[in-house]
Image (cartoon, rainbow, N blue to C red; front, side, top):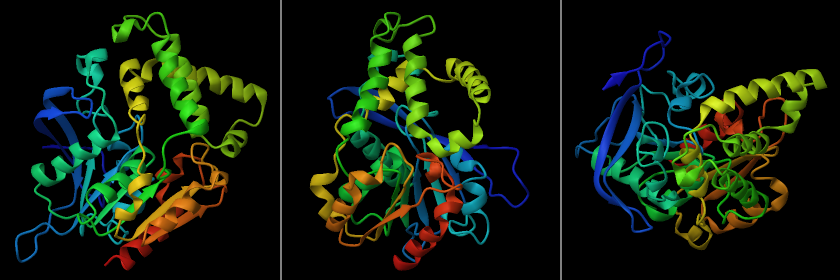
Length: 343
């Protein structure tokens, strides 16, 4: 295992590793002889009298991200230190990179446009195999996810209803992707696919379509209030735009991004919400442009979750739109409550 460097004295030591699933078949019928899942762990697995790990927690990341951002101050410094809700001296924390993300198998490794077309169900099944078969965990104390990881948290509760004690999906909704969010995802995918230089994934020069996709992604996942605060004049906004443009041009792979946004094409946990039996706290922020509260989806659907609760965080100087889920200090007290009620 590779231990990450540059940590404060009181921080837990993250360890990284890979686990390979042989002959993984995707929902489309496509397959890979080897599917690599990269993951990071914090803390030590503890076993009960029967030898079963009883302190494991699974934390799932957003679209286009990986487990690595959970190791930054907004998460690690607020949740994982001694005495905090997910104290790594008490819990065994598992941070996987989903299929197509981070250091797990993804199109940009070599297959590009010939990589199997995965979806959220494939990602959840692979996560389960990593946890159950790879790490030998038979039960989870908690599944917590943000954004795409929040969507997958709903699926975990339905597919494996007895496998965990509690669920905390964030910045997500338990319904089919439709309306403005569906258009947003279609725009990202189409901006890349319709670029004449994409060439079915075999592109060799920078894509204007990829840049357009990143522009719309940025606008949909940031808070209008925060943008107005940090970019108060036209000159400041124009200068920041140029900075963002340079960053975007070197930050993403077109095939990876296309696959990541296409993966939600058939997401829909709605029909099976009654299968979720453990305490579930669904946490969204009012300034999340991807999951605007005025749609009323969570107010309606949470009634079907027997131990479910919907928590809407009002927009404030502390929230960051869709990215509020990565500011754990905003919702940490709700996590404490969830852990208590699910003991």
